[in-house]
Image (cartoon, rainbow over all chains, first blue to last red):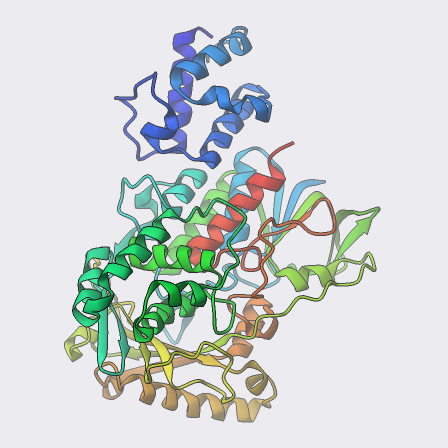
Length: 86
Length: 458
């Protein structure tokens, strides 16, 4: 997946987690926690969705990398480069 | 071999089941009873629909709210706010001799009421609210300090303190006389700062949504499947033995059966660590009316009443405590269309030992007698509706035991909670009433958080 595709995938996951949320104006540089008020349970869910959808294992120490869209995409790019977008 | 077996198809068990099934686990929910719901169930009697536990949902924040337990559980269960079809309350009262405080889902009303009835307390009340806002409910080190001590410092009018405790204890204190400060803060937010609401179809709507979601994800549910014991080998649980003798293997078990009840099921010979069982149980009367309550001049959603200045939250010596109670009308929510029947429900504290020792004949007579006494007590605080009653029902502490298995009919379980959900066995966990939070929203959050903490990370 390219960086743009990974971003789409993360948006899709966020939409699954928060179906009532408007994600069209998300700022990629701002923390999810601040703009979407995600809590620790939601961050676990992003990790679990990635595992469910793409078999990617993210150790708990790396959860901090999922703070914003920019940091998440940068962190996932090497892990997801061989995954085909379906 | 199941990944997880969940004991109990109540709110917490089903919510946990959804989480695990969603993340592709093989999950089995076992329910001893012939129907789902546990403490919060529903039934049909003589052509009318009834809820068992539900007066109102607490924690009702408006659609679009991002914070609070309701928003959190919707995200976790991948439900939309509209799925629960919640209508907010019309408004509720706390009534003590000579004083009435009204509240609705906007904290400003309660503030104005406190300022009017207790003008010298309002600044202190505001500071108390600020402190409650700060309390972090995801912090597991629940401050086990006495809410009574904390409130005696915060407010100087004992009557206001009693009036605040009354609804919060009725809706969720397993402890007699007092609450933990953490539990007080959580309940205060859930009732006074977030608010009350109800689906038009009642608790069945919520349960049906949970079961539909659970089954849709491939989760399995067995009714009339009581667990006789848990099979234990070398400090691990390996599965369950059902009452019909069937054995089912699992990699872990999450039990919502209650702490002591779960410990007794373990066949490892480990002594059951004694834990003070809850003592607080209820009787509830339910009256169906041939009119809506508002035509009798009653438009309150919930009326919490107490007939003296001191509120006594303890197991009564008498079969039922007639000094205080909760009067609920399921009609008085902001629905788009009216309910089929008018209904008034009254909840009063009750003594389990008294009810449990009655033979069948006396039990029936005592139910009739206490139905009348509880109703007579309540109509001191709401318009008398007794001439419009077309049908009645009533439950007692023994009914609660039959449907929930809770020791002593203790609706809110043991006063001593197992917040981390762990047991002496490394792959046996508890959720539901004895883990932490109570009420419908609290139970669902309990199931979710125990599933997340103990069953999903590996």
